[in-house]
Image (tube, rainbow over the protein chains, first blue to last red):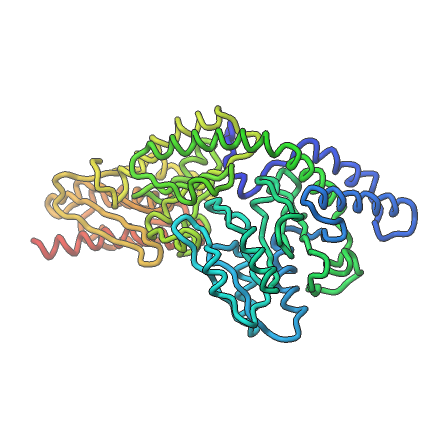
Length: 388
Length: 121
């Protein structure tokens, strides 16, 4: 472990806040009751879970009975999409995009294997889905549209308000994977026409292993497995009480501090993007403005992302890349390819995702390390046309 | 993920860069992931007297390239030709299973250079 760590990978996960840990601790210690128990140690816990549900609902502009706690983003996406498909009597059609997280893409793939038909919408060079494309893809048997609120790799914010309105007008369910958006951008479910929304606590300084699914009242969703009837039988299993309490506290804080955090992140992001684009042969991936405040994604021509990450890691900087080699798969990021990037640029991508504890000092360190590293890797690259 | 030797060859690659007056240049690419390596050889009396490389690829590909250049210096073309991709990975003290394919370009580039050299002379 290096002495100094500059963590620029908040899109992957974020550190647990002290206030959140404090809220959770009693439920990891003396408050161990099962919320389903009749006795008083259990009833106390039931009350804590319901208070967490109220807080979560309030932060999103939802009603408490519309919040279902889950084990995280992947499970919420599975329940939303597979559950809505299961609640139907016949097969049907669903619309999603080619840049979704695998926790949506692979669920759709699974449904296609089961006989459903799926349309994967393309995106433009910024990673944006167009409302017209969504409208054109609608069929008489379309029962659901699932489009992410913001992309995890390039941070592009999709027009979910417009897409939701269209879905509602046509009587089609609208699910959004908002894992990257909740706690990062303003979001009010009283205004948005969303039927199902996925969120995950560890992306906004909450604990891992807990998330939630918002299910608008009256939305038909069938559970994926059977059990003791918890979460109104939609997600049976004894509740992850410390996690649920932590999620609610983290979300409450994130929403409360959102304007301040947004200002902080936007200032850092501006400096970061300007500094990166001042380097030779560098391009910004994603949208210049319709973008998560903490997301920066750039491609460095002639070099490979995994080598870049390795070099940064040796200097105490944690980042991520859409390079195939980081995931051990032969194909680079499906998101960057869908945006039209060539293989080489997709492999040379670097994602830096900022969080509340990042400061200008973090960027100072990054900028002292990155340019010489990029130069070194370019000079030894077989593709680099320049002097070496 | 990588052992110390791999990290060392990535951080301080031996013989990295272009060679202005190479006798022959070999090239190899991984069709699977797009890695590309160029190897530059200086050959004197049937022996590799100097070697340089340039690689576009991940840490494992760069370390393998660097390792190979150390292994071939001073060797006859016959000796050098017998080096396999597995030998390079082994000399590096092993690579993570998922990254093994990334080392499958160094020996290939070398053999390409030797083949070209023999065609030329």
